[in-house]
Length: 402
Image 1: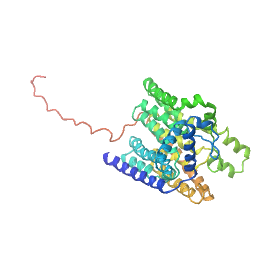
Image 2 (image 1 turned 60 degrees about the vertical axis):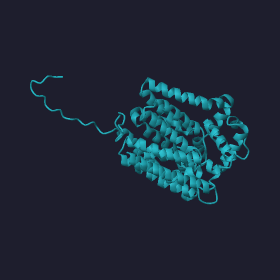
Image 3 (image 1 turned 30 degrees about the vertical axis):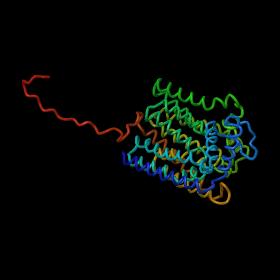
Image 4 (image 1 turned 90 degrees about the vertical axis):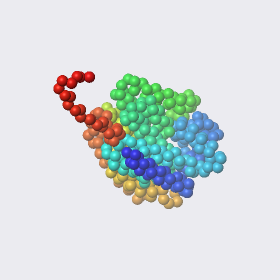
């Protein structure tokens, strides 16, 4: 086990170094410059009032409150001479490092140590994660890592207090893991009243601490910018296929508008159903739910490909490897050229193939979850060797019993 952990740790270190070298030597896409603008605005208006500012020349500020405090800290570091372009990509790169170790710990409790090593190394060296974290940046990888950590802490480590904190952090960095929160509460409820109380208390307290000041100050702006943000474009998944099929614009507008909540509800429902059936498989359920959210997403952005990468490695090595390699090529080609992100015909066709690979991986994930026993997994090689039983010599007849 020590050698296995060392192998994953070494791969994670190589992956982190690769990401940071890319961040230090490549300018990155438009998001790097957009985040620099956000950080400057937050330094001026504060991480709470930023939501009510018009921010000319910048898109809508649609990030949860904790991201604002992070950007404020990165702005302070950039003011002392550290390049902001490297700083903004550091959180996602570090999150991938932690996620590789986390995926190893999750998988080794359900599969062989060899498979766990392969999955951990796969996350560390995933082409799609290297591209989206080391080159693009953003906070998607951080949110996914916290969501998987919450599931691992709750189902495998039996630490509901820490799990509640991790769950609150996940939605406070980026709101997308909110689809996994109901499944987490279901498993906490199944674990008993003390576990539910600890999980709920930690989740509620940290959520109130992070979100409370913004909700009390600019609730409407937060609702419009973050909670109701739906994205856009016709470059991925259901919207892409609807466009290719020539469906009416009114349908696509509905799907990208109020209709996208139906797909969010489908993700939540699937996660809750699987968590009820197999609570011990919660980390796999969370990974699958985030992949399903990407599959059904009505918005498109290359950094969104992060949502499913680690979760598919939790499902299985080949599912994760197929997705990471194909969508890694998609991201690589998308980031090439003079434009910040170039959705060429080739990139969109690769995205269509990647969508199909994701769908197959999720079907495999459902089968993996349902095939697992309902009881909690016993970590292979986690316990020490079984105690040796020393046979007792027969007691001579007539000897006293002591």
